[in-house]
Length: 100
Image (tube, rainbow, N blue to C red):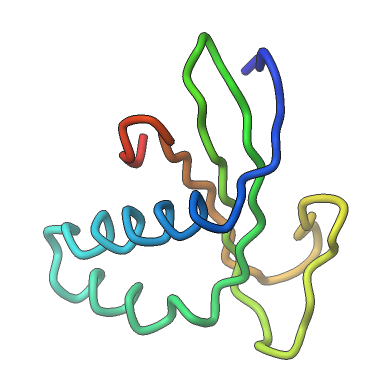
């Protein structure tokens, strides 16, 4: 995907993302999967970036499972090549406050 611009989300925007992401997970129709994800949410490292695509301001969040003491890099997304990490990407529309 080509982006028009990049930006850094601030804390209130990240809090809005986290609330929308939790609601999104709570809406998973398969009961066992929902509980499993919610139980492991605090173990997921989050890496955020903001971008604008076709006029839509979004936050992309990459999530990966890791040790609670491990600190992800500050200047780039983690690359899990050769590791056994769960990793996924979630995109959030900042204006509409929805997960895409």
